[in-house]
Length: 234
Length: 232
Image (cartoon, rainbow over all chains, first blue to last red):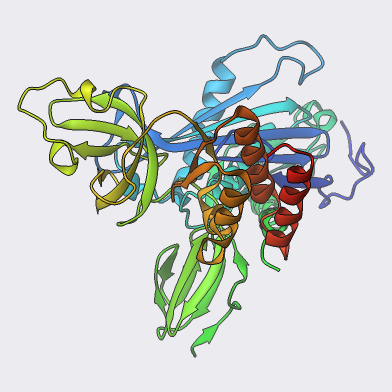
């Protein structure tokens, strides 16, 4: 692509898609959340802390976090074969590592906190939506955590650095996709993956965009949590 | 400068700064990060002089000494029973913490069998993962018959009401035997299934509408109406 002056969706280059966040959507889970960004919808459920079996997986020093990312078969245009696959295993792992720095599981030795992320509708940026949803669900489950985690994808399409790529942009030739997760208070990066080519200057520019985006998402997350319990305190 | 950044009874989320300066002390649900006190839980702020704590709004039951809990026997060993009380770890009911006289090597299923529901008191909590409970004490025993329902542990105070006003009202109106555990489990036993179901529905309603002012009166009216309909 020669030049990319106007985005396919008509958004500005630093504009994210519309975001919606909600907690408490799964009644039987200890904590649950829905995170929607544009056409991408992620739901997350948290169970625990609970006893971990088999016992040899237990860690007597700290509780462990187990993430499971999966896409429903109907979430993408072409039916996805249900069940874990290579991609899912990788994303589960990076999600776990993105969330672990904020978790305080020391007091739950030998136990496990299970996080299940399900993508019910996919239009790029699913791992970021999944992380944002999982952070909300963990907070909703009452598990002690130092901070919330927000995630957004930034990238380069047709030579332009932009935020929150959609599927159309992701599929452009030579498009670069960088999912970034940051903590809410200190903007510490907990996830950064890069797929494509980018100069140092462009990367710095992209990170600035991601910081802005994550700050916005963090506000939305805080609001979603507070709104769910607002009516309980006068 | 020392400054409190939140108001009493405000809802806070993990990562929210609560106070600046060294004059405040972090208590449960909070931690200190250099000069700031930061929340680590979703909950309500409670400030006592210079101690800040967050009372959690959600989450599993965190055992406290002297709480009365309702649990289910899940495991039997030589030492006693393992009881699921809805917290992160099962509680231990040791032989010497029961009222029965039990001979050495006796079959423990005679006293509390797998799946039995018991009301017990928490005697010791060491680092969350070692919880000891007892059946010594008034009202602590095996619960025979009836049914057990679950509510969120943070809503138990609302269900009980001031000096037990709410729960005693339901008890009087329905004539059911009701026991509320601090872990959010409620045991209900009535003379008929209809009565038990009515109590269940009433408790579910309280859980859902726990934030409404004058809920006690509302529930009272509801129970009186059911009484006229002859359901009680």
